[in-house]
Length: 475
Image 1: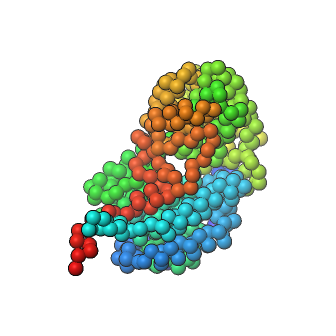
Image 2: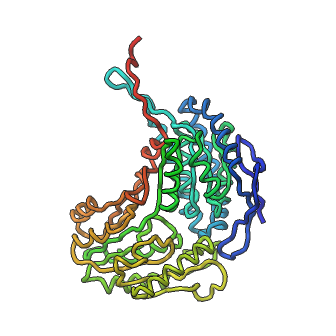
Image 3: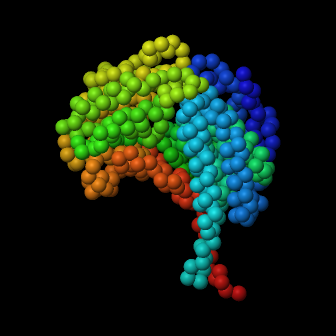
């Protein structure tokens, strides 16, 4: 079993000041795979102090220095990509094939994008005899989830460091191994001590301390909407900036003129990463004339979706991340049955042949009413809720009938209709006919899905303050 009980503070790996041991569980086997330490408030204070000490000099560093270090980090990341894939697969259950391609690939892509954005970014801009300066906001607490570890860590750490901020990362205590490997890469890249720090701990202890800490200038948090509200309240007394990337309940609107692969594509997207993606299209609305055909196509896709252990090669889905997550999904599936949705395939319990591990049956419900729990709550598992609609107005109303607003999807052969509906959907992102978000696109949502944007120049500017200077060109 791996021993990962040290924290990375001030450029060194050291034992926590106050800690207790905690096990990291392999979700494929339900057995411990590593031991880490949960830190306390004193450890959070030590990490913030190290970041604050480093910020004074790092904030004044030249852009070319930060670029060189980020390029070295990218090289380290590429060199140790296989190690990173193995860590992610072990800790959160992503199949190793998917971990290499998508999980690790997302982090590499974000590093490349932020390097490109930094190369072209102007931090000083003259305007009307004065100047507008964009300066690093300060010490940033980065609190990240377990479902896409490197995607979220690189979306926060890379722009923070590129902007000249100092950072304290608290990764998910469920899946911390990839974050600790990332800290090793930071160290080996030669970043100055204290510019990047990592501590493990529970959100209710370390997360609470970081979000309320008077020497933290910004919190960038990804997680549940409930926890995001808590972070905002903790941060309010010290007037720190808060960036939140929270939950979602994506709608996938499928018109009768959509391409023949639209339903299969949407169902596969829902089940991808075992449904553990905030932008998953978990609500499918199919036009009435194709509704029953869409239901059956989604069900067939679910039946063909294999489950297997994370270390196995292949296109299967793995387990969900933890026992708590497994039990939550089971309760929500049962609620769909109890509340009268039509269970087309899947259901409660593990898939056949899976006696151990947090495996969930890919599940499709039809005739889902908007008041049902499975239509309202973010399930975060491979569960698809299907309902019919009749016309654009009904489709838009159904899609917007949620407290969330992260990503919605449109499938139609009518380009003008797609653009028309995209403008009316209350979400931070809209994807049409399977098109992926372009590199550097802003990632974030409306309503309970968050505040702020990540990715590209939008993500970089989250970590910058704006200063107006008059008389800039006068002697």
